[in-house]
Image (cartoon, rainbow over all chains, first blue to last red):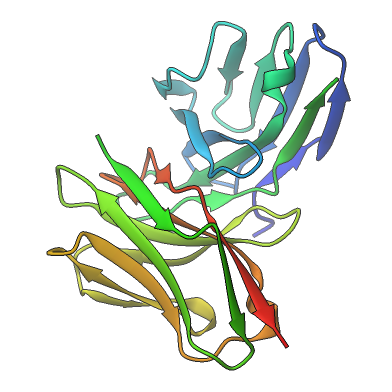
Length: 114
Length: 112
């Protein structure tokens, strides 16, 4: 069990640029989640997948944000035309789909928008 | 709508003293309740989870939490603090294992 991995761990970009983050869940975990954590706050739910299907999206996920999980394994989160307010830690989590299993979190990708 | 309120953004205790981190929740359905810990530059680690099986929930690292429906509380305790317990702690609520609503967190400082 290698745990949930995220890449990159840190990303610094200029306002207006596009960025993409990757999450590799624990093997055989059907459900995959994205959260955003800003400084001094708890994580906020963004979206989640059951295999390749995106089941729920938060209102926080504006049109500039898109998440995919094309083959039901790894997932990507893309932010277009980044803004300074997008600076945050982006956390990924995964779990088996059966009821009762909790989410395991990755180390996160810290985004800084200059 | 579900929500969580953590009382105190910073809590300091002496090494060996009781740790008490307070959490109150709001939920219209029987909730799942969680405590997570986050060490610097790391992801969240689950300490414990309440799912209605027992009101006193024991977790890892000597932590436990008691679900009190009448008080809508789920406070986290540990009898004796260690230096290694210094971290940020998040209380969270959910009506399933999917969309988890987190509190703002409490940073625990351990004084030597």
